[in-house]
Image (cartoon, rainbow, N blue to C red):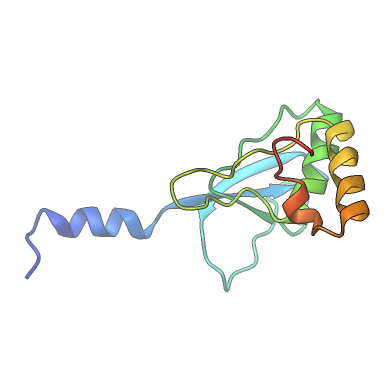
Length: 120
């Protein structure tokens, strides 16, 4: 039987929030995760992309970072792997292009090549 002190903690854990992103608006929103529900952007009413709980949005005016972000989100987002966080993510389009070229050359999946800290 659970003690009364554990019940509020268990309820708080059920409502953990994760990040959703609207690429056209360059906006990010923290909302409770629900696999069954589509999220819409409050600015443009377009669909939001689930970015994951380890996501940090760049500044709205940083267009290069948002272009890089769109590639990374389409490759899998910023989901934590246990306690280690999302791992490395490229910060520039140059780093993204280098990793995508490496993936094409070696046959490695792009989603795995994009999270490599260094290329061999």
